[in-house]
Length: 167
Image (tube, rainbow, N blue to C red):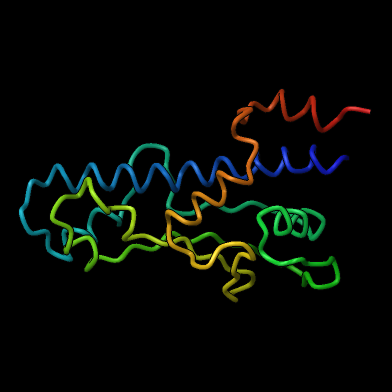
């Protein structure tokens, strides 16, 4: 499989969990705006994040092998991992975190809302960092994924298959 085909496949694979993360942030903003309170309490904010709406799960898990994780980590520019460095039953976690105090401090939920989030990345419980970005703020990580992905050509599985299984 060519490197481009592999990158397209990884873009497709990551599109589902990332789109769920984007939807959770967007829907939580809408639900908080619908509360119509001038000053949101921490408990009101926390209650919005206890449950997700629609098809957005709070937890997703994919099964993978080292032959899947190493190319994925290299594609997203975590570090330059080798297959020897991936332990048995390795896992990769993307965790969306929010700062309730940051949200409380906003005068308008339409301005600066996404600044109150971060996406932490873990490998077997150890936090991982990206080579090319300096922090794990939501906006920075989203921009990074948009920069490296093949999303301009869509996540259509047929397009991915056509590019992955060419001779």
